[in-house]
Length: 383
Image (tube, one colour):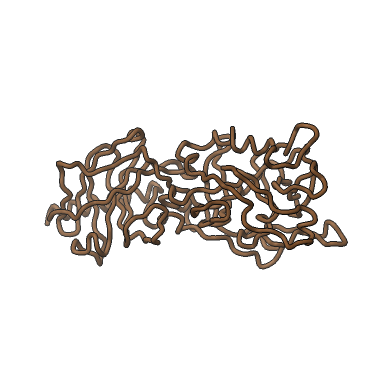
């Protein structure tokens, strides 16, 4: 009993230290993208964009804040993906700088930058998690509509990073009003706040081409109105991308009561295991798990965590498992740690009513992506 009390005190102390440090806990972390929300459909054109935000990658050393357009999108990918759109224009560039100027996304200078040097601001696991997006987004305009007459059909992509199309930025499912900000007889007529972005420049490029004018491209102006402008002009660039859901282990709230999150991505070079010559043991509901960390990024581990789920872990959380317990198990060096099975559960339910895993994590600063090895299942302990 004395040993159990000591283990309990140690567990409570570790929990208090973790909370005080503002680190990841069960209260601010969700499995996969389950902590995120899809955007609210704007009730009218005057409503601001409303939804979850994710910090992912950096530009010029600053974490990039993205709008979550869909947490489980298949618009541009065959597998489920987290569809993100930059909350601001990050830099200014021309769509094409070679005469005769072209509004072709395929040959755009911006396309080359976004899929080239722009990716230098993303860590290797972040780059690996960015899915190849293809197709036109699956949405088109009615024949002979004002949009079809002005922008034609949505423009195909085959890129990891791209620009939104008119069909994307007028999609209510993405939190954008279908209202173009036009009046057929008077242009411009009004503003559309949910199309508005700040950043380096409050006019920002779309990838939509102009019907009948190969030198013009779609853009959004400072009032959120859809517009057309010459490809040689310098406008704001707001990148969009998709993240493979299977690469996402956690979504963690940044701060208290916010809609802002960061991700934990799977790092295949951060591996944890229970040594073959050691055993998992239990004293009532206090479970001690020995572990060893390996892999090319073993030295990057900052914490070992225990994860208890109501269902088996699946990459991308395809079975909608819920977290029953998630907490620090120990520090990074090879050793072991103890956790308490939550109240209402006992050892008899291990592997049936709940499933226990350990993982090595590399926890970064508040707005930076975290990394973790894939969760490793823990066998029923010996009493």
